[in-house]
Length: 443
Image (tube, rainbow, N blue to C red; front, side, top):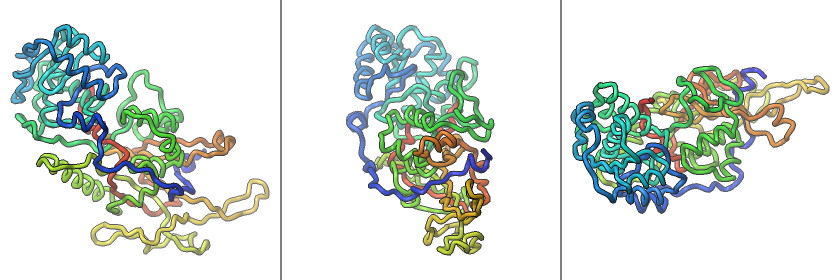
């Protein structure tokens, strides 16, 4: 299979044919409502398979016993600089140990309290102290519960590593806390999206490699099942049957799933540009407005703006012969870089294809485009080579691959694409708060 055939996405299902089931913006789960004003719970280890409400109850029970100053207080405070953790209370009694056992964790932080499952070492104590600073700045966790391996955990590990080395962790903490001495009303900056491992990082030891291989640092080629597993791990929930069907639509399905669970991504676009930089800036400005409103105490729904791209063929003439050549005037940006997609009809570049039986040249009806869902924290696009074919034989011969590609790889396009647009949309089916802190350190 050629590189062109492998990477190019296509589907005849660009427009949804069934009603879209969409989450209502601003609604929260029972756990999120109940604990919206309570401190978050960040676990060092896991959650013992408990749901959000059980985690909160168990964490509260673990803080019922006596408390004392944070272990290794002098060393940690020296490294933390102006980020004062002298008031942090440590719980090391039977209640804290029992709670950690039930949660499957070695320690956890909740507000200004830290509960240890046993006598902690310096790294563990510093790790939990970092969580206290994070929570003062304002963390964004689904149901107020962190999970092993999330970006907050990686950041806390980086802080703890610095403390153990004897270095200053003040700068690391300030990146997220908004400067030394940030007050509890601050709302930290959040990464917009994050799925999987960045392309410039090696996969964790023991993690199954991409089923269809990779070009290191450029592209990983996952099976749909591998992509879904990564998505579910991050989002903390299973995809519904309808959502899985949406993924089977290929590149458009991946983007549509992350915006509204289905439908046509262009229908949700609130801005379209001919260049990546303007779209990314617009996305960041929109999200900053949401953050500023939250900081001011205004009611703000939890959805965030995301960026996606689309490669397509410019000539949308109804005349098949006309579509062999591009339309140099179609879908060009105005003086502000804005693109008007009025008149786009999902027509592909015309081409002739040899019949494998007769050898005759025949018109191709291949509807071709490529959507990419942008991951702002790891700087890659998620897309697909094509839809998941329903015919078992065809599926076996050419399986769907979910592609994790660098921006350069995705935007290069192919001969049958001569336009690319970059769009922003408000995502109601993807919780970016579960993957916050784009620049969190890794241990």
